[in-house]
Image (tube, rainbow, N blue to C red; front, side, top):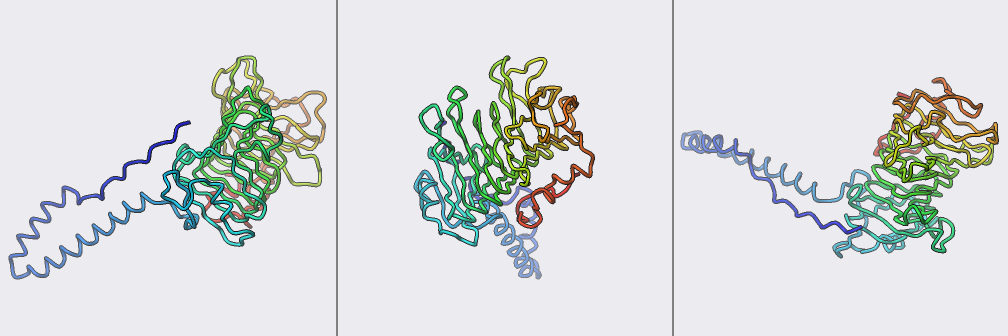
Length: 375
């Protein structure tokens, strides 16, 4: 990927053309005995216009700080305190009880970033999906083992938040496991971010995790792990590279029945790009462990979803739970032919909302859009 050029900063706005006749009329009136008063009014109006528009112009050319005021800036051109994200993370305070904000200016950052366990309440704010890009190309076929070596971004610190970013593993489909994000941290949020890869694009290992308005793409089991995760209003794109290829979107690995872990896809758009087979062979999920839980509700499923819906067979444990509720689209008419799959009623589906499943009302900040309940 090539780094994008810095945009040319536009000049401050000028008063609109409709202002000219008003201005001229006021000037003519100023010759009357009320001239001083009209001139004063004119100056006040023009001062307001200039202040309001210059402020708006400046705000468009600085970091969006609605989440937090940036503590440091990372910029490839050297105009920030750091040129590498990893350096900014290392300099962040340890065990912070307050949000520490790292503004990542647009550019392609080729590095593997670790947010260690003592780096709590860290916030990454970028310039947008496809603009602030963190990318690497490590994979298991290259001799790297485990997400701690492979992942482009690995998170261990509680309370991490990321917004307006692209996280990519560019290893390619032929290079086996290539993790873009490995997330081990509780109470983490990603908003308006994209995750690009092939197999194991996102590995959600632990804790409560919330993904909102994100774009996630991959080829096979590209959303996996054992976290307690909700994906809300996300675009889930399965990539089909071959007509013979069987695609499984999610692989939830809950192995302990006492844990509340599972995956919930709520208000999402789930589809396949590339070669679409007929009949289709894209599955919503498959069981990785005996107590796997995956729920898809109030989402759009395109025609690429296999009528069976889920990758299950006679060996699938009866303790697996795949739930569906109030989905729409040509792929939503799945055939229920296994006790592992349930068409849930509203009362059961409500257990998997942000309010109840994540207890989101207790910890999700108001600056993060979220739907607490079913619509």
